[in-house]
Length: 374
Length: 187
Image (cartoon, rainbow over the protein chains, first blue to last red):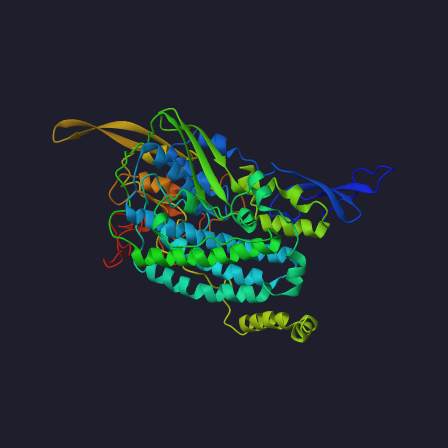
């Protein structure tokens, strides 16, 4: 264990401060949490971040707009497609480019497949942290199939670099839609299998029900987005509220929880995977023909100005704030990462719980340190 | 509490259900591949080790400008040629170095290349580039780029100098036309 000896003990209290992480496998990367405990109960937690800081936002400033895209892959490395989608969407909004419908449909498919891939990796690791080993293997099998689809489309499995300003760099390879449909058709049965392992499982319920409770009003106050917000019963999804690409044409529901605990967030994410399957199926049914790239200048020079554009990533609202000074490089490119803002709620969520519940709450927030530290 | 709920709370049926899923997966065919013995074939667009063709390159520096991390170093000079009695200036490549250890295989250099079959491509299916030393072994000059010295090529794929100059390196043309790289021009 990496939990170290007590840092300091005071005579008049039983409180003790321990350092949890940064190399602990349950922190999903290099998160360090300073935990003040009284016996087994958590009194106070303080997340310490920055171990994975690479200065991505500064790197953006020296890159051309298309050169920024491979760097966004490396922020939330479990969801590269939605990261790309946010950046190219912001630049397109700035330049007033309308992408061809086929490109928008391909983008939606990639993003929804990415949401499923991200949620499967979340489910595997979250269950593994809590003590269920098997889902990890089963979810990763499905994730590999999604990565195979990505490899066929853009040539990479993880760091996709699959979108460009103005559309998509490639058309779909022949036979891709059939293979995607075959994958989508068998996925709901697999999700049912995972649910059979966990949803009614009494050990899983003991570990998740009533852990990390947050009310809807509190979740809004903390600025949570994505499944942590929807698990608290707030119906908010960027895809519905500010539709981008062609999400306004898609039929899908926003699953919400009632109690706002870890179990509800689990149910929300499981349902989101099913809704993503629905969206991908609709995209495949209605996939229009035509070009995949709009007419864009070779050197992308957005006009002077500022723009904010956000997409619904698997972890929550992923926003890009681009400031352009009229040159081919962004003057400033700020990222509003979902994980960073969701992590703020960690001390609130674990107060009064046991140390073991801290693991469950870190898992349920679905944080990726690459995005938090950037 | 009803009697059935009491029975359910005492006997863990749902754990048995979960165990059934595990049993189902246990009896299925394995999906893993024993890597060094068995290898999966990368897809046509898979971005792997660089291929580079000096004869196609027109020394325009577009790839070096497109590279987000500036790992392509190009040096050139002009030579004066006499073609049909007219003096012409031609760019000649002195150095074409790629620092592959820093490459993130985004493929932007390939997209920026203006020649018709691109002169730098990543779709070689070759991915086994591990070495014991990175500064020398993973720094590729144009000679090493064209014969892949120090890289174990994917079975069936030839280094660019050995005649492997694909017509459709990006793999983006529809498959109906034979897109198999077979162009054996030059060597």
